[in-house]
Length: 112
Image: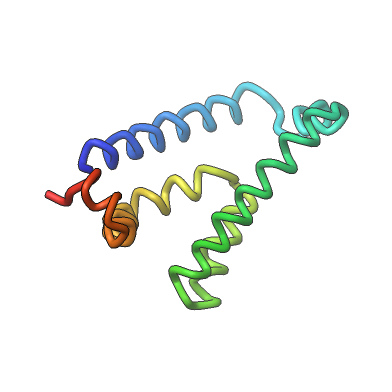
């Protein structure tokens, strides 16, 4: 399981670097104008936010606190999938333990 966490950390680092690169080399607002002018662009953005709302639903269930939900919701809706990656890395062990309560997952991913 430690390898999976390292993969998530590496993905977070690479995604952050690429986000910074994109921010420095291209106008976000001009890119949005182009994306929203395309049907597939609108579909991809809709898909993105559906996924983000599903993530936020899981945060709400896990945190059981409206304040903590808002702490994660605001940056998620602004910055997108980089925030769920951060959440995943922070709470990785909690997710592993939760899924190990399911017998087949416990056998597939033993905690070391």
